[in-house]
Length: 634
Image (tube, rainbow, N blue to C red; front, side, top):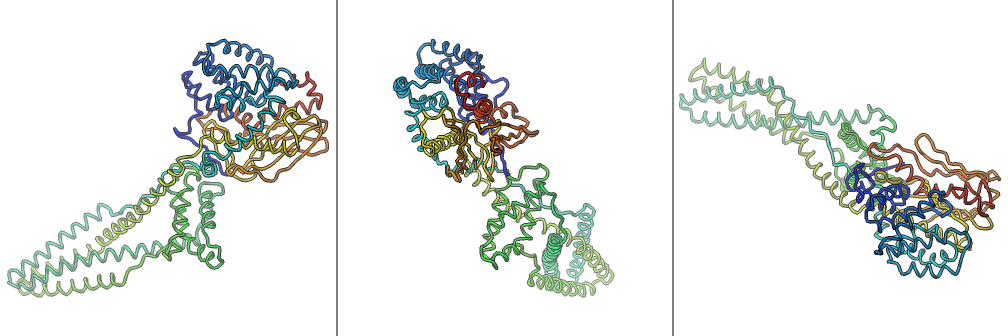
């Protein structure tokens, strides 16, 4: 399953340095609270409260974190004493903008200490809530949801569901959620072009031969000048020009011929001599991505589809091998180079559709061959013309100069052509590489710009909270219940089949597909609704409803594996098991806090509260609600 862990400065909002100030801890606690990591938020706010930072605001958020996701009866005696003392302290503070909210929390806390529903108190509490600032009211109804009971919950629920419906797809959720599961792209990287490989000895030899050749030509020119043969001087100059042009064309010819040979050899090695990459390794993952995108881009028509695969196979293998080698020195996850692979395949598909060759074979043009041969022949004719003229002036010197021309020319052609051809090859490859890198950099910047509005983890948590409320409402409507009919409820959110997962540093896993389970505990038994959530679209699929009485619950078990993965199992007496992988395993990064991650698993998935509710039912059955057993469950 694909996964991504976001790092970097823009995603470090859950990183709390050891020397953090109370203000920094407070800001971090608000972010943990917004993402439903309430246990970590409580710990940080405990420290901030002791330091006395902004006591009114800190006290209000401390109360939210303390009660978030919990009922009064889940509190231990020590916790009840703690919250009672803290409430007394913050209520006695001078009035400020947070005081009305603190007083409402105090009233809710007092009302929650009895299991009896008091309908007469609901209108007053609702009026108090309505008088609060919208932001404060929403925070209380969200985090103290389990403290709201019976008639009060009935009165507030419809407006909460309506708000969830408005906010569920807010802030362009449909077109932004997928970006959370995309890794930060790695800058494009390509192998450096193989530099020209001429040795110092070869360069010295070629330079010496060139000097000797120039000297010999100068001697021939001096001889024909002494003879007064102006035509021979002109022919000598033509020989020099034509010879230089011939060497230039010859270097191109040799370069193209060598590249043609290398190209054919590479094709043979790719087609017949390749071993499969190690399964699960970086090369294997890259190969799978090229295969996947190749299949996505392939035409639907049979013959054209086959032609696409046949034409793209070898050039795609070249790109794959180059990419694997380019990123091998500093290994990265394939999810960070996926953008480059996708761009390469799409660009190849575009060129293929336009009729461009995907793997052009270097060839030596006929005009280059003819031009090189013509220059060589013309140079030879001109040289013979000049030699016969110089021979008439001074036989000995003319023969000596000719021998030097032949010797130096042979060396220069043998060594110099190889040096020039290698330079020509390096320059041609560098031009191709620079052109490709320019297109890669353009695509890299385009992709980064497209991911620039990636949602934060807090936004993901807010959307998931809206989904949860809408699902709860569907469960209530499906079973024709109202909140005053529900003794308690629990929501368990696990990974759905398929899909991807991602998180930020010290944050919980978020999934593209969820499998939510809702347990509604009523006077007649347990009502369970299981469904699948497409998180990107905010839609539910394949709902399953299950009903069973309390005595049907045999046991509840959570197994923690060696890799910290958690498996939830609910055993019924009829032999049916409800088996859910609540959290996949995985080791924390080097700069992450294992304790924060462990708390996040239980808070965000709803595992902690689900265990509290269902373990009590499994142990005591319906009697759990009669009082003492329920209050001992914590």
